[in-house]
Image (cartoon, rainbow, N blue to C red; front, top):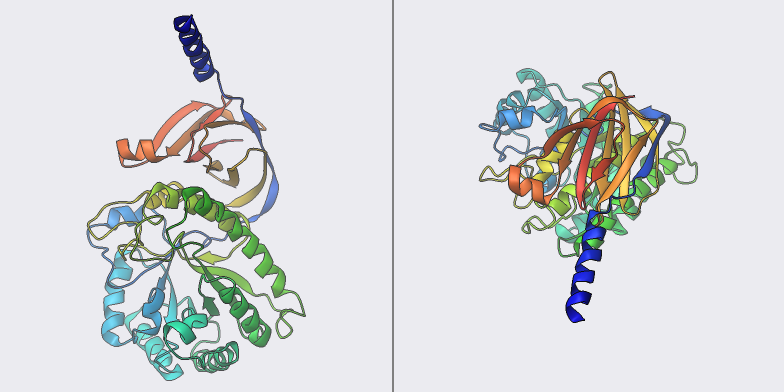
Length: 417
């Protein structure tokens, strides 16, 4: 009897394993806006990061902008001719991307920023925009100077802006680049906008929701907060109560640092597949919700941060950017009812692209509506494939077939509507 029960259990298990997944409809709708060319094509770069030897890797990412100096270095490094000469060499190797230059706010002066601007003009590096300081909301705690309030930041911001506008009145001036600390960073951001929205051209902030110690499930759940912040901060811009001095101005949005974890010395949730899943879902939101610019932290080898580590190991996060190198054009509305499976769509002259991010531990399947024509290309990235290929897998299938989305995977579908 026990033998029969055992065999019956095996039979039911085999049937269950063999049962095909029920495909969920993924409906692609109308256009919802153009994707900014700099929406998901920027990174933080520092001269300590290695570019030589990785030119082909970085060239495949369609990098269009860099933020320099990166992170805390921005308020610790003076922009001397030697530093800027070193920048030029690497900037050329990276294909001469647009430059968001961060003025040293904590240790330097507006005159120092002017000197750097003039030197960059002299050596032929155009500045696309300026950032005034880095994470000033942490100056009181991390740098031991409690005088740095939103009021002081706005006062110094105006001084830097005035000095830089005298050289080039067309430069966008960005700030305040608050930290990922919540609620403190958001409070500082709100108060800065209230006091100097008349002079900020691009409102900037950072996103680091965890310290690398959370469970995978809890960490992945934070990606939805990114879109919530984008929508909330955008609503402030035209609100005369939140932005009394600048609510009539066309202020843009930029996330100038982001990553799943802020803890540089920890590699968990920075170089693993959990980080890649979070990154893909975050980039999908940044692209389709109309953020003008973003700068991932970081290009290469800063502890756990970086798409490629100091030993040359290419991390899963690199391949997310590689998959999305052509995620440009027009963002399209999507409808998908599947727990922990998100979708984003973009259309350009090369066809339709669908980004699918499965944060669940279950395999899923989707069928695209309206149906695509002919065959489609499917790129798949998950732990199993990365361990086998050290890259994502590329396959082709009939467009009418359901697209399989394995557990904890990133999928990019390309086809013709």
